[in-house]
Image (tube, rainbow, N blue to C red; front, top):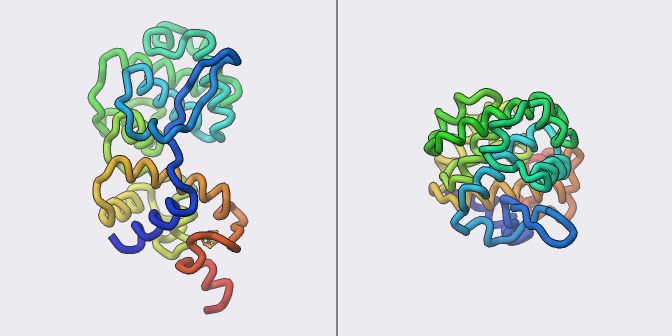
Length: 231
Ligand code: SF4
């Protein structure tokens, strides 16, 4: 286990549970995404699983706020379900998701993914990866958060954090880092959900492009800090 679980423990102690993946809630002001710790452990229904997968596509190459606006637009229009998105032309879908960027491509991805979902596919990584427009990060988000499969999601924040800590090279490939981390942790879905969310939070609070190391919960174990201090 060693250092990877040590990193997790420190991040969890600093930030607490993150409530990923955020799920839509409707109230009198409309739809919004809520982060609640129960999201990590609750039994998801088909609609919630689909919503998470759509969110994983919408957040490709953009931040969550932009993806959330697109998700809300789909929900408010009553088309956030496989049947609706599978039956629509990608151009129609694109009109609802402009805030997420690359909207023509994403509209096509949503249409194809919705058709794929109509066949109730099993949560098989190879099968999901064979779908057009779904790369490993998107698929792993889907499998972990929507289908409760114990797979560790890697993103740019993960590589940046672990390379600064001295636990991997900055140029490491997705699956190499994934294999390395998963070989050091128990295959625990809840742990993987929380860990990925905590890394995202930490990248925003401290370990951004220009890191803010003072007060970072990982400072005492960080190679980047040692290098800068010449120790
Ligand atoms: S000490 Fe600095 S570089 Fe290291 S993890 Fe913290 S913020 Fe990132």
